[in-house]
Amino acid sequence: MERRNKKYILFILILALTLVVVLTGVLFTARNFKAYCYNDIDEEINSKVTSIVKSECENRSIFLINEEELKRKIESKIPNVEVKSVERIFPDSLKINYAIKKNYAYVIADGVYKYLSKDCKVLATDGGELANSHNLIKITTSETPLTGAVLYDKKGNTASYFFGLIDVMERMGFKMAEDMIEEVDFSRISAHLIVLKWRTGAHIHVEYPENNFEQKIQLAVSALTSCEESKRTSGVWRVYSDKIAYSEK
Image (tube, helix red, strand yellow):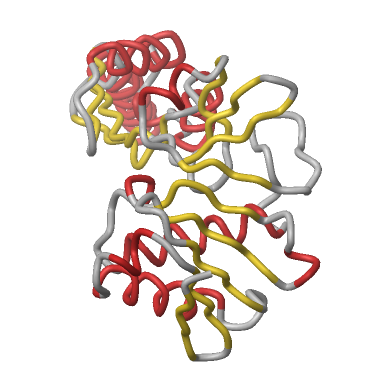
């Protein structure tokens, strides 16, 4: 009798477990997909993100979704999107939170304009139409570009200095660095010099950028934004050590 009871108990446990697995699979199967952008409203990109998530995750358990793999799929198919998080909304929904990477700069190579994020990821290419219609920073460099999604290695001079430049300005509160800087010339790095052309006309010479580059940029931007107009429209600002000097030529 006791043995029979044990069999009944085991049978009930197995049946209960089976029901839980079946019901869980039904209840928590991905069927609804949402996309939310932090920094823009773009229904076309929203639709693209949602479509990718649906094709990858529909009718799969939301518990079995590999977030990192899904993130890589989305970002590889839409280069100007950075996925911030993947939310599971019970019982059957996935929400993708993302940001749109914006074009900060461009490089001209063999007549092709390549538009870059601040980490030198190629976001678009054309014949110059975007550069002519938007304030974007022209990058001049002697560094050999890479093939693929990233034009310059983040460990190289062009990418590391450009990221540092934009990052400093954004932390200073200047979110639209491209409205202030027309061109950055990295071609003289071997001579310990980076040249920035301000849109108002003045130039900034950052000497020995390998030493305290971000502090030098902060010093230069502070000087340019607080000086009289004549020193913003012409002349050269030289930043060296922890000092800055202005000359008319």
